[in-house]
Length: 284
Image (tube, rainbow, N blue to C red; front, side):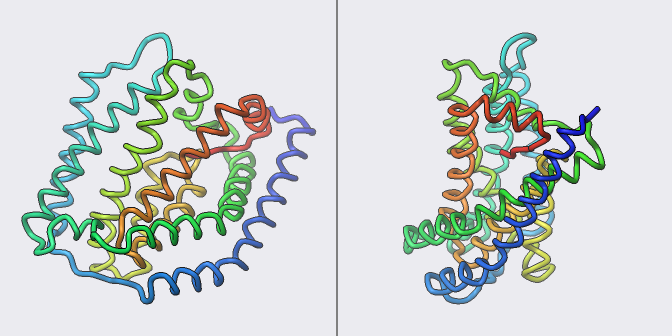
């Protein structure tokens, strides 16, 4: 049961979060102007893969996850983060390989259709990091507001299991977790969601609906604990992909975000535990 002090602290955090999220909206037009300077116009493209190919990719992900479960059993004792990440890598990797196969088979431009053009990648990365830096206070604000909402609607929801395991991760297992969680998994997630799924939804449902539905799917897969922060984050990634059509922009932002989460967990564990007690939720 929440104490009065905890409830008051949660209310204060929620108020701070609301201010941050609202204030960040004032920076959104500036962020959009910068993005337009770097990449004029939104780039809606037609892709030749369809929902039958999407279903095949989902089945490939399931097969990869099943193989990962057989190869990397979760330990009865000890930390499960690295084997869990390895399972996810096999699953998402299998889906990513099939998506790449479809792109090479059906698209005249091949893998470039998934967001791998050879030009202007550095410009896209700068656009992504700049947008993320300007909107980060708002993302933190959404996280605080979501923590307050959950505390009043479903206080049984805690931290994401991945974050809880990261807090308890032995030093010897940190580098494999960082390698997979910062570089490998974000790459496959961006390839599948922003490179493969989003163009399909955009060309069938219009730009905003396609980006929003992709973000919704992405957030739902991350669970209730981080739903709203991840949804807001995914909207940013979707907007970047829509404008740049370069996976390096979304992958770079996703990798930076996860790196910041790991750095906070490893360098400030006491602060994270205190914030956890206050009901604050972090998101991978």
